[in-house]
Amino acid sequence: MSFFIENWTLFAIAIASGAMLLWPALSGKAGAGSLNANQAVQLMNREKAMVVDVCSPDEFAAGHVAGAKNVPLGDLEAKLPGLIKNKATPVILVCASGMRSRRAVAIAKKLGYQNSHSLTGGMGAWRSASLPVEK
Image (cartoon, rainbow, N blue to C red):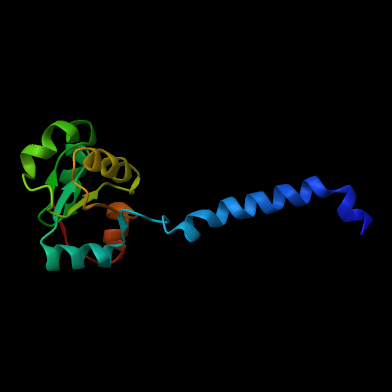
């Protein structure tokens, strides 16, 4: 028992770090705004979601989701309103790994596209799921 009393700070740190790790899962915010490849296909088929690839033109030319439109991340804020007029349209944002598309979701939501999602894992996950890629 004296061990616990003498090292109470270590236990407090362990409990606090555990709580911080569990917070996203408990609050329901884990993965908010992100879809896996199968969920993206379902959204495309059921709700006619628009796919926007935020990669560079060279990356886009190397392979992209069938039917995707290319708007590099730096141009997204200026070009998305001209590309998708109806802000209620579901938007799936894609990049090579999923990092840029998560930033793109924040930009899209700031513009009023509340039904915006990032493809988790990006084109790598899309290819891993053996889904069609256009060049």
